[in-house]
Length: 176
Image (cartoon, rainbow, N blue to C red; front, top):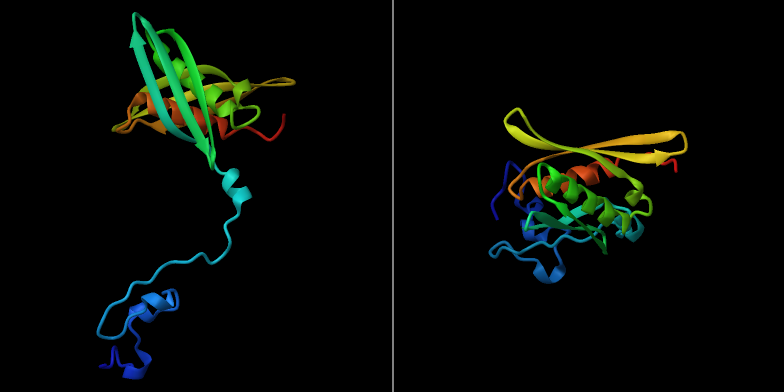
């Protein structure tokens, strides 16, 4: 082996001999090996369960002037479906998606379905289109406003509405 960057040859080891590589995968100087990553600390399953709620799927069906929406959310190994139906005129589809998302989140988070959808706005923001969801969560002395925002991406407006609602619900205060 030849010296590398001024180091003597006996100080240079092939990358495949790195400590993270499994012994069975280590190579030698003439043959490259593959290192595999291993967990440094054990995974905390409680922390994984308490991770964020994510939108997994959004479905909208329109027929005869009515719309039916279904939203599936997940957190760790949990999943929940929410559905909403109603007329599809104006911005009603966005509102129905928001309602279905609140119901789906309520299946995972105990008080998420207490929030009411106040408004859903789809508007340009610079070169992008964004969705803003405004929810209200009842409290003893009134209500707590919750606002979430999501950019419209390749999955479309309905997906962005669901993500904006999840963003708003994530901003709830700890007080009941």
